[in-house]
Image (cartoon, rainbow, N blue to C red):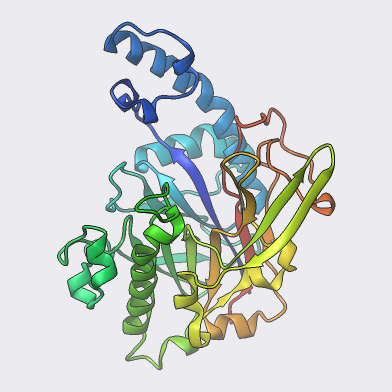
Length: 371
């Protein structure tokens, strides 16, 4: 029997307004920066109007991308709260997939902006096998001291031993698919952020993501330590890890033509989870030029495609599904995304140059045979 699982960073699925841009110009939307705004009350009125006008197209596109995954179980990142999730599912996703994702699971994590991870499930798979929820466990409370992960690199970032490892959570959910057990571990690692202390953002924030990856691995090892070991069990790690093992660096321009050069990274926090065959990055079953889930640019001098979104399978699950290749849904990308020539797709209706779009990330979906 099979179950289809997808992961997707839906990019700020919020049900509240962010007025911090009035005092912090870095948080002010570029549209409002075009206009002279006299006071905070006027700013609030304009920001509400802008956000509402922008949200409808965006969430239609988000729902289209999710619908195209055809997933039985959805692992989402950047969800504000259960109210936002319910409103999105009822007002947008329902119109495209019907009464599909009735069951929603999320807990408040550690993110300072309040964005959390969430899981949506159908009652049954598309082939009629029941999907049974068993248990949900949050690991948001785990500290560096708890797992012995505090070190000089973490201290250099100004973090204390008692602080929590996960910047959001590692949400653990046990289900049964047609009576057979499967465990999901859903996470959203620390973002790279801007350059600082003479280092690029990825390098500067790497110690935090490495600690998060070590913590996820520890949680899984501990979970299955008394039941034959993690390698023999069926589990997946899903989420946005904000890190990559390789990139497709983009050079050239539209006049002379673009170049796409694959570059392997010397180190990545994802390596922590893959070392020793602990699990498999199923997206790496795709050709090296066709693994990307995000287009990154800071202008013509810095452009690349990379994988930030992962479905990692346990050795037992990967072995049972040795021929399975994940799908990456890219039709929700904005027009500014530079596709390799043989990968261009028809984008969803009303996609903009930069926005609206489904998300800055692409959903990843895979069908597992669970035996």
